[in-house]
Amino acid sequence: MHYPTMQTNREQLFFTYAMDCQTPRKPGGGPEQTWEVAEQAARGIAGLFAERGMLHCLGFCSEPEVARQQSDLFREMAAAGAWSALHFQVRGYRPLGAAEDYDWTRPLSHYSCDEQRAVLRIAKDDWEQALGLRAETYGACCCMANDATFPLLEELGFEQCYCSMPGRHNPAAGQEWWGAFPHSHHGSSKSRLIPGELALYECPITRTLTPEPGPEPGTWFVRDFRPEAEMPLERVLEIAESNLQDMLLRGHPLLYIYALTHNTWDVGNRATGRRRALEAVLEAMPILAGRHGLTLTPVSLQELHAEADRLNAY
Image (tube, rainbow, N blue to C red; front, top):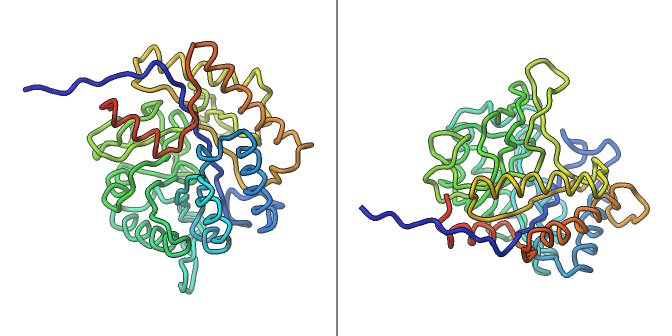
């Protein structure tokens, strides 16, 4: 039997970025976040990326409630060329017309397959109705996913996602990614931890590759270079370089960096440490590409998936 050979791309370094658009006063939101701050965040980051001719690699990944509240804003960003995703946490979610919230303390990864299918279908429809867009990309808030999630996402029509955080382990919070494959791959219908046979393409956020002990016994965490961490350029380059080197050593089919921030701070305020940290990420990318003789190529998550399929990647 003949099996088609996987190709590798060693000419480009792909770069994509996302804003996790959370609902004010829900878990994960900033304590001072308001709807006004959420809009300032989105417009501020759009302006920064547009100035650099990179708006199409920026994704606005919104919870259904945010999509409803700020639908005009996200339709405007999509029309300008940014990509979009349904970003979902089931905690505290109240679908349009429902009488009460989902359990505020129970993460989605503690849901059974049937429970998860039902709520994901509701959330997808809610988001699509709000924006008039098709939900092709899915993001798991706080990396909440279990072994049923990837096949369910494909069943519901999603094409790519960012659900995993390889190395993070906190079972009480529904984050069990110890041993997960560290870079982009097609999902498996059997295990959330391995590449598999699904058409759905999973793209982990770029982060440290060696987990560190968490604050509670038996928990582990990894660090990414979100602006909220206010990392200097040197630390951003260190993390990005370690990921690139690991992909090269593994023979990973494509080389990419994927970073994110949240809609919890005013990105347009150039005086903040977070703004400087975000600019450091954008400055680091051409430096990293130049070190390795690569062409820096800003892409959407959809375009990254398309390149993986072109290469017949796992």
